[in-house]
Amino acid sequence: MPRDLNKLLSLVDDEESYVAFIAALGNDYAEERDIERTHPPVPYIAGALGWQHGSIDAFLEAASAWGESTFDNPKLNPQGINPWQRCARILYAGKYYE
Image 1 (cartoon, rainbow, N blue to C red):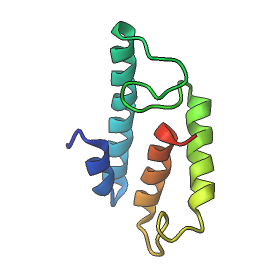
Image 2: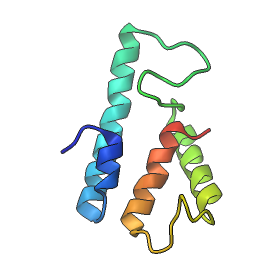
Image 3: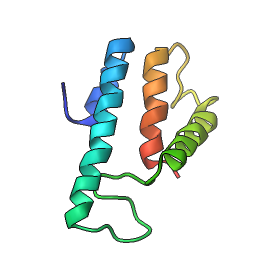
């Protein structure tokens, strides 16, 4: 399984690859927390691996906001996109969207 989240995201096309992506996203978050135990983050910037949110509610709020804001954007939500891919993109956006 590719470690690069962008690469893994591009491979999502069914339930199995979607679940693998969710697992990788969780591992990415855990890895950032491990890094920040020894190298505390600077306040008000993204974490060591780009995470903007430190709680599940903030993460889900950001993912939801991105999903809503891109719903009618054909560049970010192209017509006919695989629904598993769209769901993975929404979750991924929770990592960085403010």
